[in-house]
Amino acid sequence: QVQLVESGGGLVQAGNSLRLSCAGSGGTFSRYAMGWFRQAPGKERDFVAVISWSGGIIYYADSVKGRFTISRDNAKNTVYLEMNSLTPEDTAVYYCVVGSSARVVYTSGRADYWGQGTQVTVAS
Image (cartoon, rainbow, N blue to C red):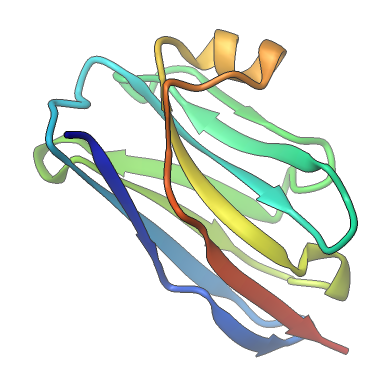
């Protein structure tokens, strides 16, 4: 059974940084894209970033370009999201996903597996 477990969320002041991690188990993710979505209170779930299995293809939402960096460690079945220059608008539950390809996740918002989410709160 595939499981994705996010960690690293919390409360930070605006302008600071956080690093999210997502560890997968119950499968081999080295040939799948891994990524992140987020859902703010009262809003729909939005795409944040995705990275291909090789790391050679990466997509970011316009709202996080230049501030967030996605990376992965296939040996650990883990994907990371380094978030810098955080603003209150980044406050959301962040979900880790696994999908068949980075382009599919980016263009369709569809993924094969979803984590339970980790809360990120940015105080002004």
